[in-house]
Image (tube, rainbow, N blue to C red; front, top):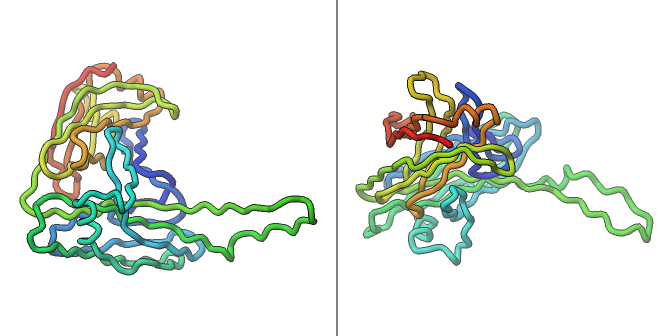
Length: 275
């Protein structure tokens, strides 16, 4: 399950033996699975669970996001969606669209797909958004102010998380290749970076392991690295502690493998000299 945490598409990395996973933000919602693939004929379920101590309400919707060359996901307005993106919104159905979850009470969201006859083969993707609905009754009342002391404004943060919902139509395939790798600085600290290129007519998705030649245990593991069809190549940037950044320099082997749930086969591996 995926903890409902603040931020989208952010990867963190830590030292030996600990996996780096996508971190999302805030609140107490667990979502499983974190990625849905539909074959064009059968639906599935997404399970929500409130691990907080108070009831919480969430609104569920679909939105369009496009991957950038830096690996981010830009939200696209529906009136700016291309034909394939609009088709994805039309194909994907789900219910319910709003849920109130008591503490530790799971809720199933049914997800279905309707592929119109004659739809061109390809991969169609929308992102399912789970957005917290603020509880107006729980907001602390502002203390009354005497006249002339100005206006009191209360701000309530609204948190949201998205998971991709992918519809695959036809016989699709893709390959990926690992490019150059380097350690660089970001405003949040050092990061291990490499280029990841994709060819074919669908996305690729999997895990990264970085090891020293001759060592059995990886220095770095990162889960859930995707390249979507709208980009041919993206940069992967994984934040790491300073001590790990130093260990990652020099000769390493980078291995990109399929998701463990579908076998974990190797997509690509490469030996690189990291500077």
